[in-house]
Length: 440
Image (cartoon, rainbow, N blue to C red; front, side):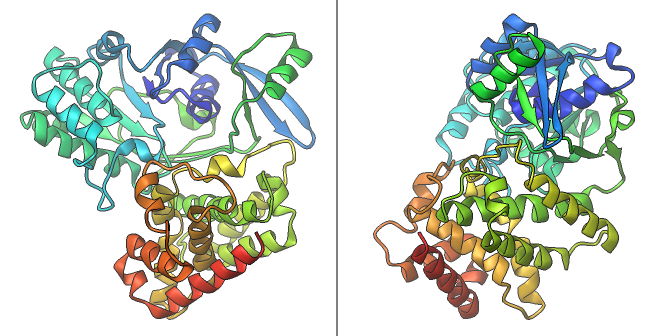
């Protein structure tokens, strides 16, 4: 079963399952996050869709058939029915960073009104109308325990460091609030995996639908455009089994963290830098931004800082850097910077701040990392891509009605008192902000 029936899941986990040699033994029941639109689109197509793999050398069109059923988020009867089934072996998630509804310390944000409402409903046994993914999962875990359906694995696939532990923490917090007796069963029966996922997957447009129709003759209302590159690194136990993903190209390892850091810092970190800084220079897509020598220099500077603190072999990291350049230059993938810019409040702490703090600990004030923070400040101040953030009210209040200096102080205070209390960091961020806004 999967939660989050978006393009990334369909270009990634569903694609790996479709390519596994034992694919005929597995099927995915997929649920939307909030909007029912994708279930409405894929339902008449019986879960089938076209994966449109785009490169400068040409396009490939493949039908993916691993999704056996599609459901809107509100189909609670089906949701609980799958959890009660002994055939359910793995639950994967792509709910984005915001979907974990975490506080900055990683615990469940119990001040969030949706969380509060879900706590009240779960305490009285209500399972319909739940608002957050953690609450829906807790309702599912409770149903599975009560039905005696046996063990399974929960495998988050979002861009969060230690995403398995991140999910386990918020679920444990919620369970302790609504059904403490469930805790022991979860600890003995449910495996929480950690994954690193990587494949650039833009939003679908009419151009993609037209390309599928023209090249194949198929009418597909929900094709998925993606790049040739794909990577999935998995660290988990699977007490109820799983598809043979490693034979489809996935890497199963004992420790996913080094791969996770490489991807979060190098790919996602440079994406965030470009999403805020390159849009100020008028660029709309990643390929446009990386072709700009100024933006390319900013990215190279950031990569040099991040690479210093990775523990993977140097030749591996340099090969990954070279691959990133080729991926970014792929003109056939219109990866919108405005799409990447969403939810910066969730992304910067895991994509940029670890390298910033590591550089400071080494006695250096890193220009790449401080520029990325400054670009986010400029973004909040109305430059470049529009603000779309799960904590928009909170982070916009940091800069509204304030001078540049006051905004920098407030944003750094929000990101960490250690950063706000470092005059060299404050000065560097303010200098970058002044430079960026002068070019707007």
